[in-house]
Amino acid sequence: MSLSLWYSLKGYVRIQIKGNPPIRLLELARENGIAVRGVRSGGDGALFACVTPDGFKKLRELNRRARCTVRITERVGAPFILAGLRGRPMLLWGGISALVMLQLLSGFVWKIEVAGCLNTEPEQIVSALYAEGITEGTPVSSIDHSGLGDRLILRTEGIAWIGVTIEGTRLLIEVVEETPAPATLDDATPTNIVASKEAIIASIFVYEGEAAVKKGDSVIPGQTLVSGTLTPAGTETSSRLVHARADITGRVWYTGRAYVSETTMEYVRTGRTQSASSIEIAGMEATEPSEFAAYDTEREVTCTCSWFFLPMTVVSENRSEIIKSEVIRTEEELQKLSGEASFSRASEKIPEDARIMDYKTTYQRTETGMIAVTVIETNETISAVSPIPAG
Amino acid sequence: MKATRKSEKPIRKGLTETLDLPADVLLDEPMITAEGKRRLTIENHKGVEEFDGEKLLVRTSAGMLSVSGRTLVLEDLGCGFLLLTGEIQSLAWI
Image (cartoon, rainbow over all chains, first blue to last red; front, side, top):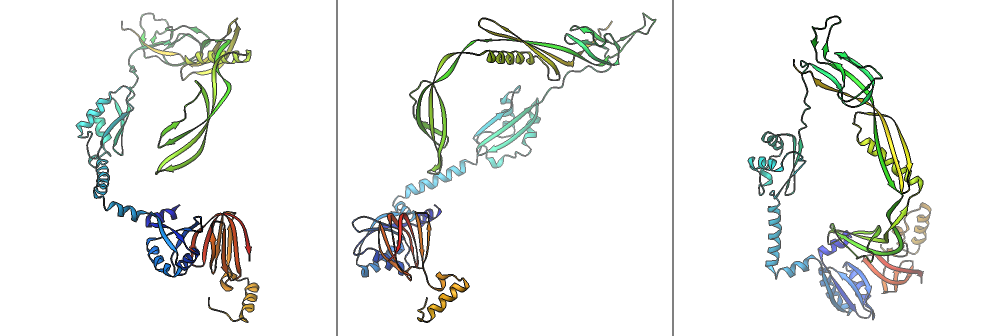
């Protein structure tokens, strides 16, 4: 293909040779060093061949000896195109101007995109950019984006990091917002430790304070687990308030319930099929219309090539018609689906730091479906800090 | 290659075969290379005698070579070298 491109750039003429015999002229050309390509029969004893323009001039002189009839049938290549353009200067200059304008305009920012804003308004970022002197129409070369992210953070609030990227004429701002620190009580504040949920105490290690429960005790939300009021034995009046600290874990049970119907509407294939093709050129796709209202598609790429320097893909499709139909589930399917759904609902409530120790699912068959109940046992931290009211 | 005396030819041939030297260079023999049924290169030929879309006659030092087929095209016709493409059906020495 590269050779064809080279010949197209250099230019060649396709000639028709008639005579007796036409090969005699081509032999003369070969002996005199004239390159001849693509010799093929043209019917009626004529031959077609391709030679360079210079070669054709030499061929005409040799033809006096061969006495053949030579006629140009086609002129191919850049030299002939350029010769044609000489008579159309405005087309040539218009094309050059368009390319120059494209090159010049691609050196400016025409679009600003902000991504990653969850709690922050994107307009805040854009305003900060305007304050830095960067707007639509700013030359790309004038933007110093090495330190721009840091300067934008100083002009905004609640932003941990800003990334600045320039892609062509687009300015992309990627934002990572700050994660607020959790509110904590200082160590001097007297506190109790209470249960955050209903549980059975699995382990309790008290660092400061007085334990109010022991391993195996059942607790309810809000119940004091470790008291921050220390009362020395034998003295009811003098007590000391401390900031209670302890590691307490408990067994917590989560329940999830789900019902799955015996019948369901699903798409099933009717058996009718249709073959179709689609063409995709530079991201745009054109496909044959379908004779089915709803269908499954199996696609296979049959050809990938380029068309006028644009990527083109030809895809063959096999479409199978589908319709909605009532399907009755088997017992195994009912158990599996209901069990998975109930487990999923129970585990939605489990915190991330909890460790699942065991789970059990029970099933109940009804006339119309299956009910599944899953109970998940976890071991997790159940302590919460509660300040001791003053006085 | 300059003309050789009759007595030199058997000596050259003997040397070529004994020492396994390239015959196309020393003996001026044609070299024919076929790639499947669609491409044929002939090097060291003496000229094309006849060509149409179905038959090619080439002069070589070893004799006349006839190539027949369908939709034959002489892709390249250089000095001493030619490239033939198309549906090649047979080669024969005449």
